[in-house]
Image (cartoon, rainbow, N blue to C red; front, side, top):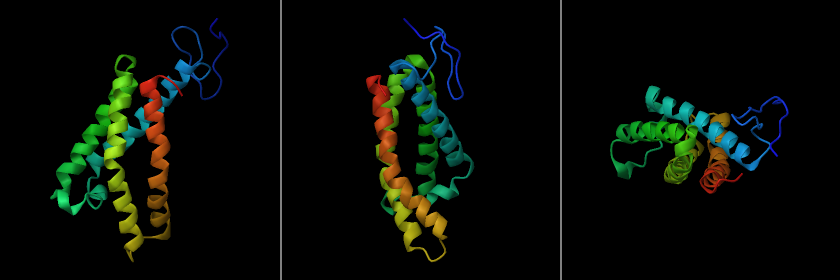
Length: 149
């Protein structure tokens, strides 16, 4: 039988009265919504401040701005798909593909920061840390596809 307790800090009550985070389905939902929030933030940043991301687009792809704007839109599409229960699994598939597609850009950003005399130590550390941290995000997106967390 479903848990009928009140939600605690960081938990959300589902429509069935079950507290998200207490069941596999609730954990998948919570994970999907966290990813949706993160993708909404980064997708918006790509559109509002695209210059920040221009440097990570490989030169071989040509002008960076269309790629940056397209990836921002893609992040917002993934966020929307993850947020809606009916499209959540598709959102997980799209998010997995997107994260794997932009991983080389994140690696390029870390390399560029490491090579730059103007990059602060904090920028170097943050861009380098982002590369391996993306792997758990891919795993979480795959878990949404599989309906588990």
